[in-house]
Each structure stands twice: as C-alpha cells, then as structure tokens.
Amino acid sequence: MKSNSELEAKDVRIEDLETDDEWQHIIVAHMETWFDVDKKFHLDINAQDSTWLNMTVFFDPYKDTVSILCEVDSDDGSEEFYYEPTKNETELLKDMIAQKIQIEEDQTPKEFCEHYFDEEQEMKQ
Image 1 (cartoon, rainbow, N blue to C red):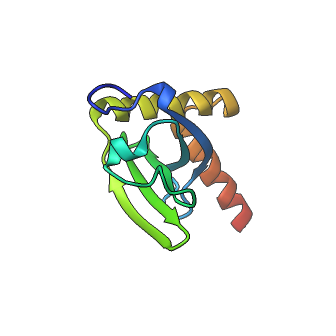
Image 2 (cartoon, rainbow, N blue to C red; image 1 turned 90 degrees about the horizontal axis):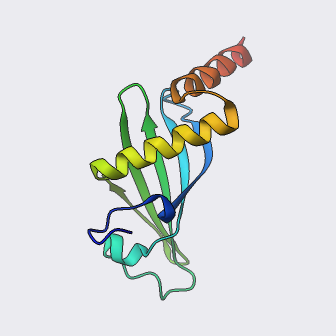
C-alpha cells in the first residue's frame, strides 16, 4: 500500500469473476486482500481471529465505473459498507479484471458480459 493508503497491484488478487444475475452488464469479482485492512479502512479486526474482511468489486465496463462492497464478518454477525476507490485504485482494478478476463476467457470485459448474457438467454429458451 502506498504511503497515502492507495492500493497497489501487490495488495490485492482478483478471484471468481462472474456477471451480476440482475445486472448482466456488471462484472462481479471477489478480491483477496494482501494489505493492512485496519490501516486502510480504520478498522480494528486484525487482532480478532474470527473476524475478517470480504471485498467484492463491481465493474461496469459500459459505464466505466468501479465500486467495492466491504463486509466485515465475525462470529457475532456481519456489517457492510461501500468503499469508493480512488481514481488510481479504480484504474488498477479495471486493469486487473481486464487482464484476468483476457487470460482466462480470451475476451474483453464487455465481451465477457455479453457472453454470459447470451448463455443465460439460451438457457431460458
């Protein structure tokens, strides 16, 4: 993480790409965290063994937007909040998602959405 608390490529890993069931033009990616979540989000969970942060990235390649849902899970329940990434973080995440789609599916993000939308339409027929 940079000194200004911006995320870098080494801080995250993009996993499990899919499209949103309701909004097929949005790519949903689960994000592994490799940074100090307490420092980044002003939390106090690192010292709690049964508490962790799940992060889900929502990327709309048509509107070129990224938002992140953060969920703090513990034995006592869960709490959600949205994090609006900085401009640099947004570009980083869009690039990481696009690279993963290119490597795994040989598609652009828009093609990825269209492919899943087409598959779903075929299944409904």
